[in-house]
Length: 172
Image 1: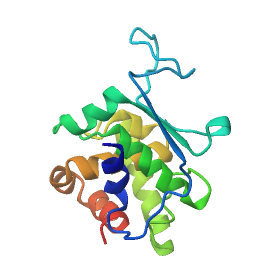
Image 2: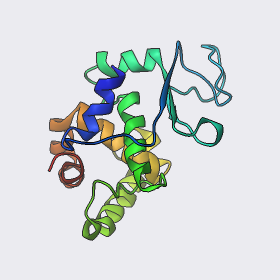
Image 3: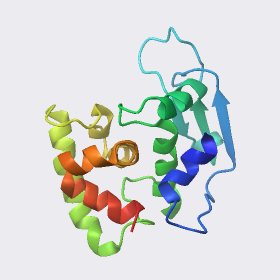
């Protein structure tokens, strides 16, 4: 499942190599910000993350989140795909929500305008895109990417402009 998650966002790139990843750690359950797994954690539980600092070049995934991403066909989400999209974003050296490796330079400004418009709508509860996508343009890219790969027909119908932008990143 980890390998499938890695391939999904880069399928169109025949020789893609995640040069910014050396290790994928699988935790048995969701975890907290201190990387402790406990199903009774109060506050934010985490299903996956791309490491920084001492965890640079590492990904941590919850086994439960990994299975859920491939078993639920209606939720528009996949934690592992989300994290691999962050690694694509980071391929230019920084996670900033601008998929430089995927998007031609002339599309960056229109992409950012669309992202901020959609983030505002998310934050006003006016979209069916997961709320976490409204927290930053970094998370918007990963959340919208999950939606694109999990429910492409629905995304195309409900958000045609966003679908086209993501299609130009991931498919063309």
